[in-house]
Length: 158
Image 1 (cartoon, rainbow, N blue to C red):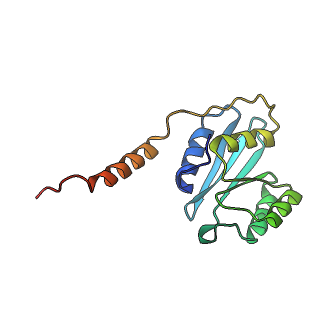
Image 2 (image 1 turned 180 degrees about the vertical axis):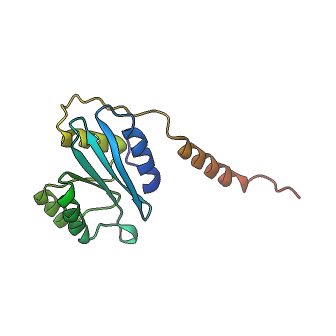
Protein backbone atom coordinates (compact mmCIF):
# COMPACT_ATOMS: atom_id res chain seq x y z
CA UNK A 1 0.00 0.00 0.00
CA UNK A 2 1.38 3.43 -0.88
CA UNK A 3 1.79 6.33 1.49
CA UNK A 4 -1.23 8.58 1.92
CA UNK A 5 -1.97 10.85 -1.00
CA UNK A 6 -5.02 12.48 0.52
CA UNK A 7 -4.86 15.92 2.05
CA UNK A 8 -4.61 15.74 5.87
CA UNK A 9 -8.30 16.61 6.38
CA UNK A 10 -9.44 13.92 3.93
CA UNK A 11 -6.96 11.44 5.41
CA UNK A 12 -8.31 12.05 8.92
CA UNK A 13 -11.92 11.73 7.73
CA UNK A 14 -10.99 8.38 6.18
CA UNK A 15 -9.12 7.30 9.35
CA UNK A 16 -12.19 8.07 11.47
CA UNK A 17 -14.38 6.10 9.08
CA UNK A 18 -12.02 3.11 9.20
CA UNK A 19 -11.78 3.32 13.01
CA UNK A 20 -15.56 2.94 13.25
CA UNK A 21 -15.19 -0.37 11.38
CA UNK A 22 -12.65 -1.85 13.83
CA UNK A 23 -13.70 -4.40 16.45
CA UNK A 24 -10.94 -3.41 18.86
CA UNK A 25 -11.48 0.34 18.99
CA UNK A 26 -14.16 2.95 19.41
CA UNK A 27 -13.90 6.70 18.90
CA UNK A 28 -14.40 8.42 22.25
CA UNK A 29 -13.79 12.04 21.20
CA UNK A 30 -12.79 14.18 18.24
CA UNK A 31 -11.78 17.82 18.11
CA UNK A 32 -10.96 19.69 14.91
CA UNK A 33 -8.44 22.50 15.17
CA UNK A 34 -7.10 24.32 12.10
CA UNK A 35 -8.21 21.56 9.74
CA UNK A 36 -6.63 18.71 11.71
CA UNK A 37 -8.72 16.48 13.96
CA UNK A 38 -7.44 15.14 17.27
CA UNK A 39 -8.98 11.74 17.91
CA UNK A 40 -9.24 9.83 21.16
CA UNK A 41 -9.94 6.14 20.73
CA UNK A 42 -10.70 3.54 23.38
CA UNK A 43 -9.49 -0.02 23.15
CA UNK A 44 -11.45 -3.07 24.35
CA UNK A 45 -10.19 -2.52 27.92
CA UNK A 46 -11.44 1.09 27.96
CA UNK A 47 -7.93 2.56 27.80
CA UNK A 48 -7.58 5.73 25.77
CA UNK A 49 -5.08 6.47 23.02
CA UNK A 50 -4.78 10.08 21.87
CA UNK A 51 -4.12 10.41 18.14
CA UNK A 52 -2.49 13.75 17.40
CA UNK A 53 -2.21 14.65 13.71
CA UNK A 54 0.47 17.18 12.86
CA UNK A 55 1.59 18.92 9.69
CA UNK A 56 4.80 20.89 9.28
CA UNK A 57 3.08 23.34 6.95
CA UNK A 58 5.26 25.44 4.68
CA UNK A 59 8.43 24.27 6.43
CA UNK A 60 7.75 20.59 5.68
CA UNK A 61 9.07 19.53 9.08
CA UNK A 62 7.58 19.51 12.56
CA UNK A 63 8.78 22.16 14.99
CA UNK A 64 10.40 21.54 18.37
CA UNK A 65 7.24 22.94 19.96
CA UNK A 66 5.63 19.60 19.12
CA UNK A 67 7.51 18.07 22.07
CA UNK A 68 5.90 20.51 24.50
CA UNK A 69 2.44 19.93 23.00
CA UNK A 70 2.78 16.19 23.46
CA UNK A 71 4.02 16.61 27.04
CA UNK A 72 0.89 18.60 27.79
CA UNK A 73 -1.32 15.93 26.22
CA UNK A 74 0.48 13.16 28.11
CA UNK A 75 -0.50 14.80 31.38
CA UNK A 76 -4.11 13.76 30.61
CA UNK A 77 -3.58 10.94 28.13
CA UNK A 78 -0.42 8.88 28.76
CA UNK A 79 -0.68 7.02 25.45
CA UNK A 80 -0.16 9.41 22.53
CA UNK A 81 0.25 8.53 18.86
CA UNK A 82 1.62 11.38 16.73
CA UNK A 83 0.58 11.01 13.08
CA UNK A 84 2.86 13.33 11.13
CA UNK A 85 2.17 14.46 7.60
CA UNK A 86 5.68 15.95 7.51
CA UNK A 87 9.26 15.00 8.29
CA UNK A 88 10.29 14.68 11.93
CA UNK A 89 13.82 15.75 12.79
CA UNK A 90 15.96 13.04 14.42
CA UNK A 91 16.30 15.08 17.62
CA UNK A 92 12.51 15.32 17.93
CA UNK A 93 12.16 11.58 17.22
CA UNK A 94 14.62 10.76 20.01
CA UNK A 95 12.81 13.07 22.44
CA UNK A 96 9.46 11.46 21.60
CA UNK A 97 10.88 7.99 22.19
CA UNK A 98 12.31 9.07 25.58
CA UNK A 99 8.90 10.49 26.52
CA UNK A 100 7.20 7.22 25.63
CA UNK A 101 5.19 8.79 22.80
CA UNK A 102 4.56 6.85 19.62
CA UNK A 103 4.85 8.39 16.18
CA UNK A 104 4.36 7.56 12.53
CA UNK A 105 5.65 9.60 9.60
CA UNK A 106 3.34 9.85 6.56
CA UNK A 107 1.63 6.54 7.39
CA UNK A 108 -1.08 4.69 5.54
CA UNK A 109 -4.40 4.19 7.32
CA UNK A 110 -3.43 0.53 7.79
CA UNK A 111 -0.15 1.59 9.47
CA UNK A 112 -2.11 3.70 11.96
CA UNK A 113 -4.53 0.88 12.78
CA UNK A 114 -1.63 -1.58 13.22
CA UNK A 115 0.20 0.86 15.52
CA UNK A 116 -2.97 1.36 17.58
CA UNK A 117 -3.21 -2.43 17.91
CA UNK A 118 0.41 -2.55 19.05
CA UNK A 119 -0.13 0.26 21.60
CA UNK A 120 -3.27 -1.47 22.90
CA UNK A 121 -1.32 -4.70 23.31
CA UNK A 122 -3.38 -6.67 20.80
CA UNK A 123 -1.70 -9.78 19.37
CA UNK A 124 0.09 -9.58 16.03
CA UNK A 125 -2.80 -11.50 14.54
CA UNK A 126 -5.19 -8.58 15.27
CA UNK A 127 -7.53 -8.39 12.30
CA UNK A 128 -7.71 -5.04 10.54
CA UNK A 129 -10.92 -4.21 8.73
CA UNK A 130 -10.24 -1.64 6.01
CA UNK A 131 -13.47 -0.96 4.10
CA UNK A 132 -12.92 -0.96 0.35
CA UNK A 133 -15.41 1.84 -0.22
CA UNK A 134 -14.26 5.30 0.89
CA UNK A 135 -16.80 7.54 2.61
CA UNK A 136 -19.28 9.25 0.28
CA UNK A 137 -17.85 12.69 1.01
CA UNK A 138 -14.49 11.67 -0.47
CA UNK A 139 -16.16 10.16 -3.53
CA UNK A 140 -18.12 13.38 -4.05
CA UNK A 141 -14.97 15.51 -3.72
CA UNK A 142 -13.03 13.37 -6.19
CA UNK A 143 -15.91 13.35 -8.66
CA UNK A 144 -16.23 17.14 -8.43
CA UNK A 145 -12.47 17.60 -8.90
CA UNK A 146 -12.42 15.35 -11.96
CA UNK A 147 -15.46 17.11 -13.45
CA UNK A 148 -13.82 20.51 -12.91
CA UNK A 149 -10.57 19.29 -14.45
CA UNK A 150 -12.27 18.02 -17.62
CA UNK A 151 -14.73 20.89 -17.94
CA UNK A 152 -12.06 23.11 -19.47
CA UNK A 153 -11.78 20.69 -22.40
CA UNK A 154 -15.51 20.77 -23.17
CA UNK A 155 -16.84 23.38 -25.60
CA UNK A 156 -18.44 26.29 -23.81
CA UNK A 157 -22.15 26.93 -24.30
CA UNK A 158 -22.87 30.34 -25.81
